[in-house]
Length: 439
Ligand code: AMP
Image (cartoon, rainbow, N blue to C red):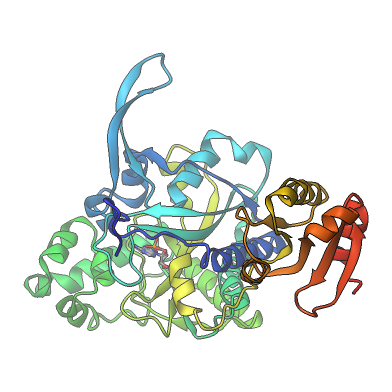
């Protein structure tokens, strides 16, 4: 692509200045909506002890087994005045880090329910393809805390799902499918596990080698497998009656569904949706984009109460989701039209003698909050005007020989062509003219 000795690392992208406004637009919209549900931003490190991910996502998960991008082991103080080597990895997802921080910072002693969100890069050593990167970005939300009444948890689940779809809709996405399912309580989930094992026993040899392994380690992951042979086997497993669900879990799920309907959040039920990570229970959901190809997942989430205790924390309720920004950008490519960044004024000087005065004017205007730039090259009026147009400036402040002699500038509105003459020393008047667009 270029003559540089180095290329961008495989599976990563530069976000170029022409693309950055799109990213800013997505992030700002998401922030505004997250704020309207009272979510507060949390920023955790981009790397953590690898064991945190192994513990949370499950040692046998594909991400931990195959996709961890590890760093050289580093000496780290283990807290007992002892330095030990710990292996670190770039974070493949956000939930584990947020939960670690929740526990470390004793959030449960501060508030009943912590509504936390993050926006940032995640890293997985996957085989790159369209929509699948090694560094990608997520918008994630987590609601964790001891506060919620047991009976009101379905409301929190419904709110969380509604929040994820609200963000997508605000970004102009309407062609997505929200799939939901329940794994039920931990007891129900254990029953489902046994049921799946029973159903799959006779078909082990028809499964891909990975799934044959999963059969022994975590049978749920077989339902997530994209392999055609595995899908053929799993599609025949009857899950419709949800016979393994205990009564309370069935009522919980029913309530979530009726709330979503009340909230006008369209969904389909998918009994085969289990989200293969160890930590999920009760409500799980996935959102796929209709216009995306094989990598069609826009986001996913679910309830994960047990993860907090698994990581040494208190017994609390926890639910969250993550949306992939690159996938959103792919799906919304035609609808997102953020405004190009605008410069208020482009200072034009026509000779070296005027440059210092022009440079000073740009400096003063910036100090007054005006977005100003100047060409660091003396060039003809025509060429300077081209630069001003290219910069998307609303005004050109022209400082030629006549203006320099008279101590003025000509402020020209590049959209209307109108112009006024103002004293160069009167930055306030220049600022006023620019901001009020008086011409
Ligand atoms: P997951 O934790 O795998 O369910 O990921 C949540 C969301 O992040 C997915 O639905 C995707 O939108 C996005 N995502 C996950 N992995 C990647 C990847 N390798 N490249 C781009 N986006 C990804």
